[in-house]
Image 1 (cartoon, rainbow, N blue to C red):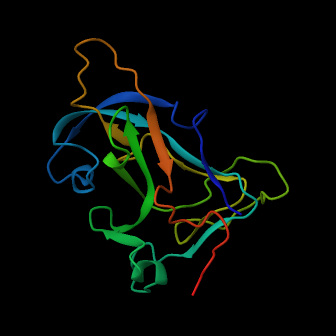
Image 2: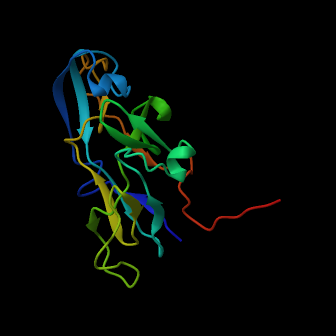
Image 3: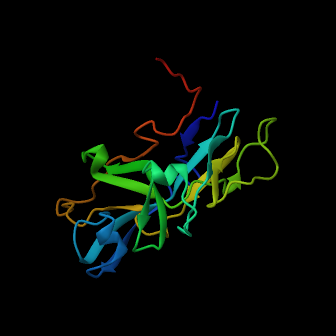
Length: 191
């Protein structure tokens, strides 16, 4: 079965830093709710990286990513929602980030697409080539899906974190598939 594992080393959560960024009103980060306000913001930015360590691909399938009027079951069932700010659809259940004592739901990360961005495992289940991209989504076995620290909203807004008493060292947590919406096993149905 597919099995997404969050990477914390290499290109993962431990690749993080503090960045100051000016966020004007109307910015996509404000609309998407990934900053606590406008103006200069102190952000803890990081890579978030999933690795499908399972023996099967995490298959989502075709998505009308740019809303060209083709429809699609995933859009019809509100798994993806249109972002006027980004001019494409977002997968609503990608993950959640939090830092320290904050509630895990404090920052919901929407994925702009789930795709196989790089081959991470060299095993019998990992194909050499992948067909998963934004228009046909999923993560092949042995492949990873990377959201780099340079992407908007791949951060936690720590502007209001009090550092007057010195450095603050807390855990940075990324929970992939927090609602269990992506099937990482065998689908079971009942009556």
